[in-house]
Structures are given as structure tokens and as C-alpha cells.
Length: 371
Image 1 (cartoon, rainbow, N blue to C red):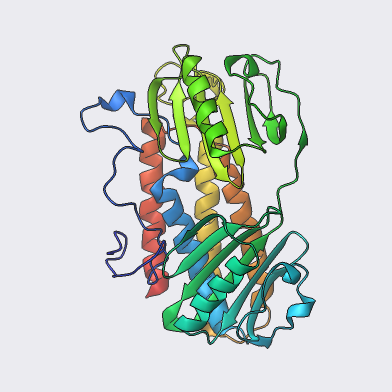
Image 2: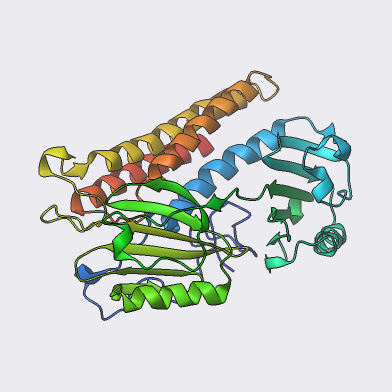
């Protein structure tokens, strides 16, 4: 496969040269048919667009790669890993520990051969990581019966194995909203879940105890409720509006979990977005304030990365770099949080132009830093 970002040949979900996420093979269905007018473009979550993952992959992999390359390996005692009992012992004991908490385990193991990687994937499957499994020659992801989520990434050229394990999502009994937003949708079969947020005009909820058949049945029920306008769908997602302009996003997350988000119609004249109401007085240079803040946060993240790399290049062995890295990741998390607030929105003309300007500036800065 050829990377559309840098042109390098690679296999798997991410380019091993620049870290960009692989674009899917030509399947235009997640977007819109070629003959559909541009004004009817389905609203696709901003953090699920291909360019958003390029942003995340390029910046995060770049800094993580530099740090792991410059940091000293340590001996990893698997018994000291808080979530280590959920996984088989890795085939080697030297590497880097990034996160070791009761919520998440993230370690990189060095000096791993192709065979050792393949054997470790099989060992993980043997201990139960077989639910909703996806794999290729360089990556593996799956849940176990308890709901732990495992992601393995293998960097063959560097003989490195990245292991990430997340604890199960905590859920409990919920009450389906009796708000204006809640009345737009049918209640799901299961009422075990977790709300990320809930307001009168929008909410986002995870629903557990949902098989793929239950997910497909819920999508059909939403279609029966009128959510068929400008729809686009895939095996694991469905997006649509109803005639009144309400927008719904439904995803099958995995491990019998689906997510549901609904947003009120956009009543701002001339805007191409859906979501909560926005008044002209709230626009900044024709852009929604939150959108501009998200873009500015992203550019600030890149600026801090550039400053970090200058320090790293000047003195790769400086222990203070770890502190700078921690600060950088905090800002990165904040930028991502701001992006996620735009989950079911699209950009208007002014926002599109600003995004292009930001990307041009960021690309120039990254090229200068690489040089």
C-alpha cells in the first residue's frame, strides 16, 4: 500500500514512515455518491474524517517515536504491571513503560522478531482476546470476555512491539432521556449504559448489552422514525438527519457496545453544520467560537512539539525532556477534547478556509522542524 501523505510503501493501518492512518480502499460509500449535490453532503464527525487522524498520527507518533528512540530502555518486570495478569508475558523484557495504571497499560517491548510477534498474538488469543478481533501483519486488536480492550502494534523494522490494554468501560442502569432530543429517537433494547453528556437538545450515550443484530435493529428503528435524510452507513456506523434537521450518529463500538449521539437542527442561516443552535453574534470572523478554539489548540500543540524537538535535538539525553513531554501530552489531550465536541458537525466556508490556513502553517512548521 502507498501512503497518500508521504508516498512511502507500507502495510497495516498506519504508515511506518510518517505515521499517517491508511485510507480505505476506494469505497466512497462512507462519504457521498459522486452524483449527489455538494449541498447534501452528509454530516460526518470531524474527529472521524481522514485528515483528523493524519493530524493525530503525524504529531503523536512523531513525538512518541523520537522519545522512545532517545530514551533509555529498562528491564520490565511483568509482575509489576498493574494490568499485567490479563495478558501473557511478552517474549522479551526490555523496553519502555509509558502508562502503568489500573485504567491502562501501555508498554513498548524491544527486540521482537516477526515470529515472536505472531506467537504473542496467538498467545493473547489463547487467553481470551478473541471478541471483535481485527488483525493484519502489523497490528491486532480485540476484547476479552471481561471487556478489556487490547491493541498490539508491531514495528518490524525496529523490532518493537507496542502493547496497549484498557480496562472495561464502566456502565450501569440509565433512564432514556425524556428531553426534546430523547423524544426524537426510539429507546434502545438495552438500558445499561453511560452518558458522556446529556442536554435538552443533544446527548451522547454508550449502550452495553447490544449485539450486532441489536445494533442493526436499532438502526432500522431510527430509520422508521424518519432518520433517512442524507444518510450514510457502513458495517459499524450510521449517520442521518430527519426532516426537521435533527442529526443522529450511531456506532457499533465493539464488545456489544454501541454509541448514540443526537444533535438539534442548526438554526443559523447560511451555516452548513448541524448541532446545537448558534447565533450570528456568537461567530468569530464567520466561525463558531468553539471551532476556532479547537483549531488554535491544535496549532498550539504543534508549536509546542516544535519547541520540544529543538530541545531534543540540542541535547537528546536531557532528563528534563520527560517533563516537557508530559506537558505536551496534556495539551494534546485538551486539543482532542475540543475536537470531539464537534463530533456531528461539518465546517462552513469560513471554517474550511481557516482550517486550510492552519494546515498550511502547520505543514510548513513541521517541514522546517524535520529539516
